[in-house]
Length: 144
Image (cartoon, rainbow, N blue to C red; front, side):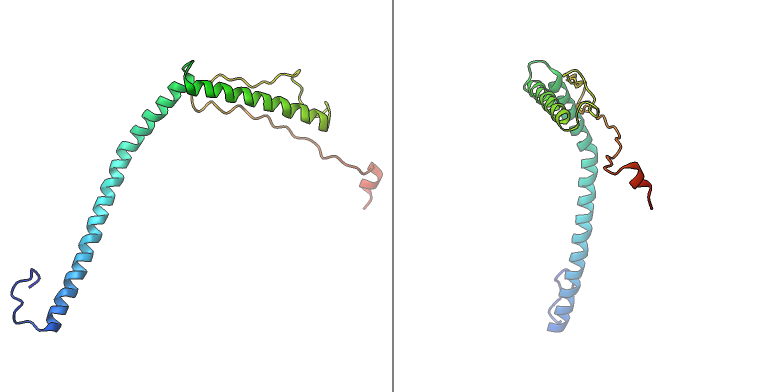
């Protein structure tokens, strides 16, 4: 009956019950099929994606350091922009805080543009602590 054979003696209610059973079974089959296909796709992605990323990363790293390549030229231009912006920031800090709080480098930047690989593109950040400025006199600050 589930194969659609020998249905002649069945009532409408019996046929409806068989149809409902078939729909429920078909939903279960589709869910299981989707689960199997999803697992296969995930497994293929685990195998293929790292290889693609490795090749792509290596390709970009090579072109980032080849003199004359477009990526290398762009890196050099960005390096120059960073150097100019750092110099401007240093000058603005000098105007705002004066020479006492700004680490002077005699007008030059310590930033270098030696690109060894794609992970070395970030220059080190130099942070320093400073004491908050107090406008109170010591006598007022110690009163309860």
